[in-house]
Length: 171
Image (cartoon, rainbow, N blue to C red):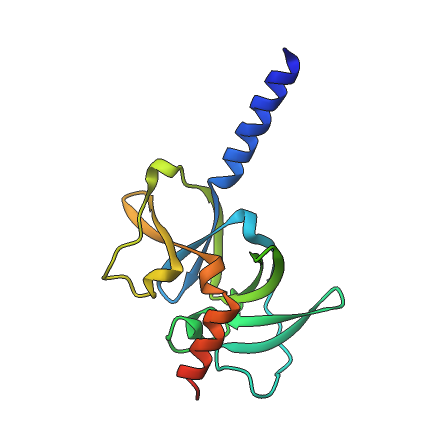
């Protein structure tokens, strides 16, 4: 009987984690990434420039001996690069593609908080009207009568998608 209670508790813990999101700012808009995709948050340091990269790849940072590419999320979404301020952060994100782990740094203007957004407060991505390519949107989370864009990290940071964007948006 206690084993069944332990399993129920484990399911509750997993459910709780799945509803948690990191809120961050790009310009004046609030975005969210599922907390389970986040490895860590770094204070901004200028990445090492890598020649011949798409304009949205700012360079690489050293994360405990590993070279991690840093994506300027504003540029990735077709917007101008954000100004670097004291609140600028690099969010280290891990995605799984074909059972292979990929780690990226995502440059954001500011990190706000980790909050819980219940599934009942998440709507499907709109088919129009969003300022981000709708394939990048997992859903729209309702928080205090306003919406935050919940990103589909797997699509927004897809290597194939970024490669096709870099060829079509070459500087």
